[in-house]
Image (cartoon, one colour):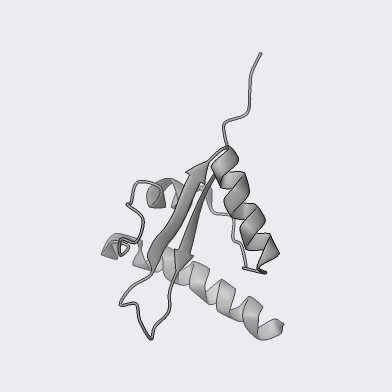
Length: 88
């Protein structure tokens, strides 16, 4: 019997008034991932699906600045989120 791989998520925060770079503020798999997603939905936090980026972000410690090699990918996510927020 094949089971689907557990869902994986990573949550980012970027507040230019207090953060020099975006930070991973939550991450998890399976039930933890489901709880993170539920909290994001409850709080109207925009979500982006990017399995490759999550794979890279899950290797980082919580509250760690993202490394320079991920700036471009994370910047694309942030632009998408900012646009979504402006449309609301």
